[in-house]
Image (cartoon, rainbow, N blue to C red; front, side, top):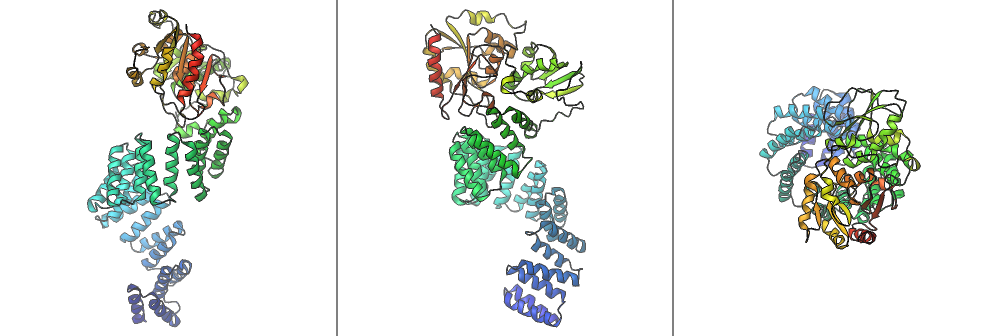
Length: 611
């Protein structure tokens, strides 16, 4: 019997599977329960693609003799692609019988990693490395498990050890690049991806990685080129196609992006992320109903998908479905990981009866300026309101009627009985289109603002117009600056004096103009109180969707707002007015990127006011 078994093993090792199987069956005809033969025959069955039969054979071998570690280990190898949890149990039994098996520790570690158990995987890999410290795959895979836990410094150290042992490993270079990107070192990540491609020019994963780095570095065209190279190598690669579509949305090409998302969904119809992304692309084209349907499909597949809920909120609010939209808007906290951890209850609108309530601003300057209007309603519920807000807004917001105090974000807070995020107040007060608290002004000038504003602005001849052309890119909403030079033709309208309300680096754009037609006020715009003083000395404010527009609207000043084709939800459908700001007039792009058309319409409206 031993001779026959040795012959069977020899045939198997020489690649003569049919001969090996014939000998195994001969042995089993004599001894049907021969464990080693059942195990070998199981391996042969697996090699021939008959995995279910292989599992039966090896289980029979274990039933006959369960003390052989190799039986359990090999059963785990066969089960791993079919049932990782069962494979894990097999590896654990093998390890109990052979505690120093590096192969079993390696496979168990990989299985734990696959099952979302990175801590257990780390234990296996570290134990295996103590037995075999020069195993490059162990260093690499330990790095992957550490990276899953956010332990990026340790992960990078592991990848570097693996590369010191084997420098020509493109997969490890990709892993190192991903960890470096996670640390924000985009230049080093790019270099690592490029090194991987130098070793393996056709490596799709490296092209995708370079695309991600390029996009995060603010180079969307370059990112698109990398994703297209990846698709040229692997036309059916869903990740490359999905990422290309994301970049096309960045580049204001949502229709093209939607086509790619639909191709991904043809391959992976149950991919919630792609349904969400398709919704974004459709919303960028003004297709709110279709976008909501996409978000709905994403949420059927993943009910707790925070980003899809949040995007759905934007689409609902933009289409004036306020009741459902405000509820969905609460998912913003899950998207932004905004958790203050207060040990006081969250206020839901009940009578306050003299209690102190903390209202805390959690988004940008413009959001705070827009929604601070609700403070009066909170005081109407009997509350003593303390508002926490960014420092540049503090002086101005202290003019809010009924407010007890304004605390700068980061400063110590006074005692309070309950709290509420500022942008949750529309939901608390069941705001609908007809019940928006639209009375303006609801902000006023602090008494201590500089008296010098009258001299800076009021003595200018004609219509005094302030302008702001820059904001920031927030989520899928386009608040990027417009090119100031597009506005220069407006300076030829007679009877208008122009003033720049722009602060920060974008104020330097004034140097791009052929003639100094705009007076630069930025040196004196030290906070929003001073900007408010400037606005109150102007006859008109023209701004893109940024904090200056909200400030002018809150002060009840005439305000013209330049909006992209995909305007933020708060400006609603295709209206030219705003229920939030009665003194505002909206000028919208009629197609993506068409600022020239917007400025032409604005100039036609402005010309009769000059002179």
